[in-house]
Amino acid sequence: MTMSEKEILEGLTKAVVAGDGEACIKYSHEVLKAGIDPYKALMEGCAKGMEEMSKRYDNGEAFVPEILLSADAMSQAIDILKPHIKVDKSKVPGKVVIGVMEGDVHDIGKNIVRILLEVAGYTVIDMGRDVPMNQFVETIRDEKPDIVALSALMTTSMMGMPELMDLLTQARLRADVSVIIGGGPVTTEFAEKIGADGYGANAPEAVRVCDKIMQAKRGVA
Image (tube, rainbow, N blue to C red):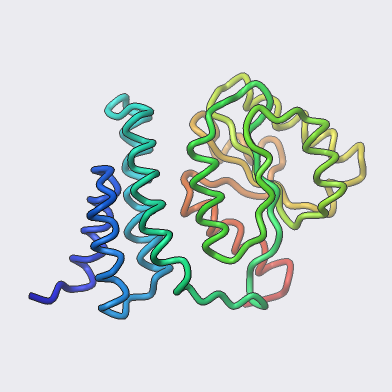
């Protein structure tokens, strides 16, 4: 029996939530067989599953081992779908420097954002976790990215974000790079307060924010 697009996307979501790699592989092949846009499958199937796991983690209903299982299952889907994704390089993608703030070793969310950005065609320089501020500044100076994406899962590390933005201003780099922020304790209000250019509540939203920034930079409607 042939599955509908809705059933396939929901199946992918449930497979990611369950951390079921075999099911992710199965539904990924169904995506290709049914002619569904692979990028849509990743965003509305896999990424939706990771969003659900992030919510469960925040609510104390899921723990790190389960998040890692889900991320691994999603990676198996990405391996199948990514080669079939067609990206219009002239339209949106640019270069993004991404990393977790100094003093913070929580990088699961950052890793998922990186994967989705790469899938969307962005060039991503991943600085990892617990990144010293001067290292961010040096990398931004050397790489000249369009966007820097900062992540924090702890309130203490989050407070380094405005400090880093001040350092970028002092280094005369702030005007040339857009800053987006995200992570557990981060809010839209905090992003506005510190003068960030965008806030991503989750991984798919972070990609949408980057797309919007790049469209504005390149004058794409």
